Image (cartoon, rainbow, N blue to C red):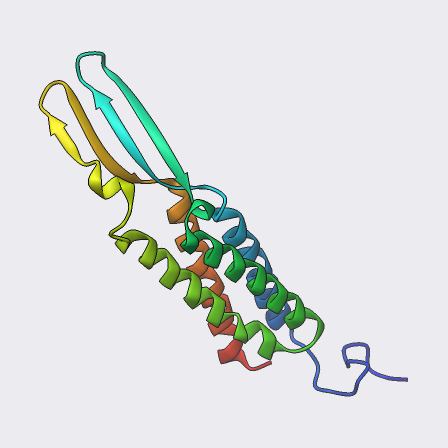
Length: 159
């Protein structure tokens, strides 16, 4: 009779921490993929005379960087699933799509061709138009950092 924690293929047993790290990569990867659908940036116009505000938001997938982030999220989820099913090493490989997502998020902010950069002006007391970073960009950044952190922890645990 075999030991209940031993895998069927005869390889080394899996620790609970390695499974939790793989599940963490799956959840953070899902959050990363969903964050690409959220608003990342916008142009806000504040009208002082009317005391109102208008905002036009740009979702992550409206820009090429958002598609890289969404793809990185899906790949992270797949690597997390492979980490649960196969080996901790697949979980560790998720550090690569996490880094790609973080780089894509940085490139989104530095894109000089954006409409928001050209629409920054102000007429005191009447109108103030300025670009803004929306909550979806911050959610994507947090999710990419979590993917990379879980993957790095899986690489450091080595089991």
